[in-house]
Image (cartoon, rainbow, N blue to C red; front, side):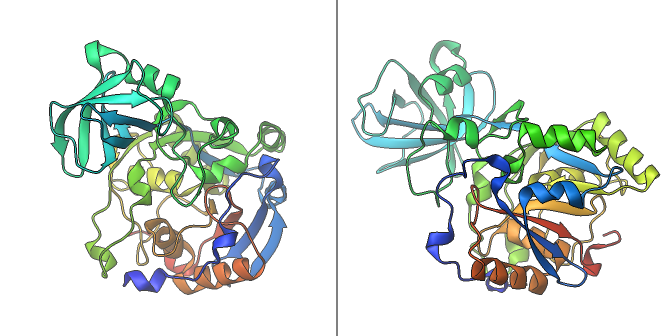
Length: 356
């Protein structure tokens, strides 16, 4: 399939720039992948769409304040976006500057864009493809530096600087495992009160971990999507999550992934045996139409960028034409798009069933 097969026209004013006042106050477009039927609801209505025997699978990654500003010792300004923490005092990062810093150079960090550098710095140790390996001096934990002067790494389509509200709202209420540089945005809609109500109704939940990397925003640049080199992200699927899926299958319930990151976790863990097995390591799984899903019966997800790998994943689940028709309906109904936007509840099309 071609990259252009996943294009659509989105009015820029529909890209949400701020979260709503209430987490669960967003809209919910319900898409039946089998029939293409669309229903317009509110996110809180998800309570009525779930059954007592269902299982929700959440990604419990926690976003780190991964954006840093500073300058080279020679004075050139730069922006650093941590891709992943590789150790207590080391990381891989993207760096934007007029000239790329060389190994051995020192980066002087500032508390804000355009500000004068403070007491913190990083050393460039080597170039790793498009990334730079960084080390903090004298073994100082990099996470401590980020907590003091780091900024929440809002995605590029949010055209504003991060604000105080983003410290809380660009983070799920169940975020626990620190390491992501982008939020698993489908989970942003769940409030503590809604989670409590789901528990009262007998809907089980379990957690997996995928540390979302900055590569999630990298565009597909090749025409033939099968030639796209998928970025790798760190995944953990524990025994508890695997047992929860098995219990759900045994009682006839549905496994519902909250977000494409949870989908990628479960599908990675199911690759060997056809059902989730404990897994810990990187995944570069790329799901696009033609893929047969092993592990999920439905998903909650936000709306995704044109020609993105995430839109391709959703299209594999519910059908490309069906998904794009639903997107056109969402645009006509003035839904809010992307990270701080509205959500979808999707059941599969016939092409998603079975095994690879």
